[in-house]
Image (cartoon, rainbow over all chains, first blue to last red; front, side):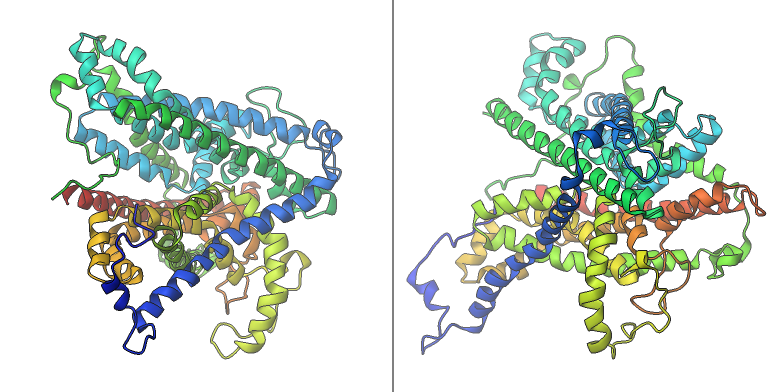
Length: 303
Length: 328
């Protein structure tokens, strides 16, 4: 938004930057130093991620093989099949929960609520999104594992994680439907569309890519979450067999390695971290591609 | 005055006339119901924790530093000792990055760099934890702490520890490493929010400032930052909410000792990381029965109360920023 170059360059203004003898004046020196020094702070922001990606790749890639991915962990020799399947099952079920809650909630808020009520709901959704994952973990343990008697299980972990992911899906859905240009709604209502027709035939095709982006983003956030899982399921050496069976997960492997740092387990933790990194970055790239494409497609609507 | 670009914040649009609002044809009431989901979920979580804590009465010692008598002092102190310095660092660095992104860097360069910063916000905290535990903390111990215990020992809190627990897994673990990892983890979110706030400064103001002969630094300092200050404050609140709730990454580098740290390298703990690392032991039936579990639930409630307040304040600030812009 803000200009990176001065918009006007008149001799008079350039003159202000130098004193009589042609030296740069103090405030210009300040400006120049800021120009060259402040961007160095990007190194602090981006440097760690480079180190992180480098070290995790260095520790994980040489030991990673198809064999590791397809065997179950046993003792210190870590296979990744069970935690990988566990993570997959948990994230799919959790996404289903988050979409059920978040999509319906967001749709109702954007399309059916008065503006004042919608604002209240949005604030509460945003505040809920700021709830630490560990709190959701405590909720999952006390409400699902104990009170409902599900035990440490796939179901308890998925529902807890799903609730954690709900506000992200909610926000994306709400924003997608609420930002449909008004003239489209006017045209639909004006040509006699019923609410259901407007929703299904007009609003949903426009809003869908943005909702999808939100769902992928929620998955990217959910798949690496550890705290809710530690409290609602356990590390487990077999893939989950049913809703109420135990289910391991990639993040649990890493947390387990911290609790019990044997060399083989730490190696498995680096492999898990590498897989998680690939999944998370992959989901984020998908999000970006979908977002850019849908924005291009939507630009036509605003003309 | 010409209309300035208004960001697409949800609160800014003028309300739809009644005719254009959807009213379901099926039944009057039901489409409204799912909108209550966020509120209901928040309430359910709060009530579950209240119920789980059994409102166990730990007496006044609950607010003390006596861990043996279930005092929360150590944990609350640990949380603030890590979050506040981390927030200060993340705000300072983040503001620098946000200013260079909006003011100094050419568009193509910031267009390449900023998505990287945004991507950082999505890296799971367990990965930061693993990296912090095995790579960053040992690196800091052998390079930074080894130097600072010699040359910065005159600063209170930075003198060397005399009785350090010498476990190899705890290499470099402690308060300082906790602060560093937390800074790195909340840096992307504070940067992102401050960049948004600075980008919402109308172009008119920028151009007027430059036309008056101000340097870009002066326009940033005197015009853009004051204009965006509510958004920047909002970023601080939301960053603080993140920092204080951060669990596994901090747990893996802070050394896990429920004691008040004696200096910057000492082992300590935070509310969130204490909950996760004691939970399994609290489950085992022991002499105290479920008392520890009730205590953890109450600790969770305290943490939840802090984050709810901080997030509400932050959201309110951010909303007001956008309201400012719309009013211009």
